[in-house]
Image (cartoon, rainbow over all chains, first blue to last red; front, side, top):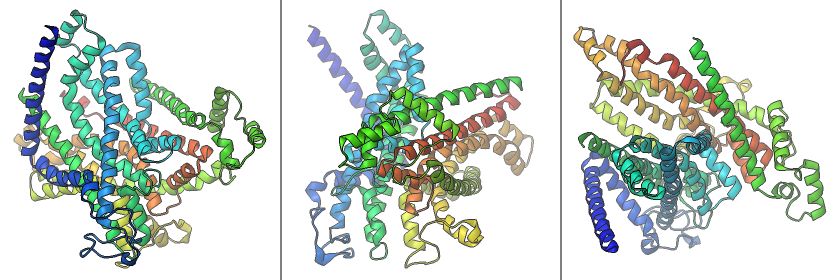
Length: 297
Length: 321
């Protein structure tokens, strides 16, 4: 009996979610910004994440005879100073950069959202303590905070993700908290309290679904920002490390070869610019769609 | 005015607490790197006795709160200690670099102010025109290109085979001539200002657009005021306030990107010192540098808030959202 009820409930929730997600997706695609961003992002995401399947060469394979080859011919985008295939390196580099952006945002959500909801809902001492802590972290400029965390943890892709995740947590917690404050006195929350539901249930079953829109918008903008911080750290030599560099490291290395070959610097720069722009645009499109939904509801 | 000074005092107290917490976080990093400080100075082959000796000498074997208090007092009184990596006084390392970075930051702020605000206002007035579209497209490109991409592209363009008109990097003091000085500062400051200009321009546009929709602008128009007067007297005055705030708030962003840009142009400032110190794990330098940058950030935030509260236009118009 109980399982039957929860099954129908979960089916209902799934249906509701599917219809909401599809209406948001169509809404985003129908805006100019959303459409342009998907045109940028879809190919970049698919190609980068599928790098091991489609890269024509091993990104670390050295072809001494072919160094600084121009684009076209055997190597579609040319080669670097060791004769490594630039297309393969850009694809693999994108994989690292995009994974950093997505994973660090996920980290920020996993920690920031619960902190924000519980703080906003409980209020009082706990709220005050948490928000003071979050504000302290926010009062250190983002890149500096990331640098500090890297100082403790050392470089490498996992530590880069952790560092950016720590930077993202307080901002996400703040936004979640303020949305929580605006729904915490709604009737369905009072009803859940009267039913004697647990804090977990109230936070994640009642509040979370109703504060998800602003969090989603925030997260989509963060992905681009995460890629920006991640590649900046790599550029400074404090992020991802060879032999699996991201775009930031590639651009850093290309600087000593600017006079021999411009392609070396150009491809990762273009890929990076279009990726960050894509995430910025999709974030703005999402915000426009969500705002119009709020107003029309 | 007394309410205002009470507000100021409250804010200063708040900043004091925040900075104290930041100093704790920064100091905690020393504690999170167990034994490293001594190993960093002596190298990995150090014997246990020599490590113990240097820990004794540096006071690293004391309780953490004693060390923290000691460090904090040292920081406040200007006794910043000795760098691990080159045995120089931290203060002597920091001051000349702080001055150079401050020049870079000041020039950047001027560049951003004189370009971003007029562009944003123009885009707002000519809403939905081709200029507006161009400005918003330019804004997206500017926001999306990291500083190291723009900087590297500038180096490729202006210091190499294409146009060899500017130095690759470095810094020359004013005493070696204004032109030489400016030539070394132009690429880093333009690079720094691009993202910030894009940010500030987008905000200025949206604020002015918002104001132009307000009732008092409509009634000013209906009164028969010329469009120039409507814009200069009403729209700009109210629309630019948040922008002033944002200019100050952007200091936080500037403090981060200055680190990257100094690295791109091998500019011998505070940012490059910080990166070098992190690579060398030179804790005394890292602690003081980050603390100084946090102080600058805290006070620019305070300036933003105070300006906004002091100049809030709603007091004059008595209009609420």
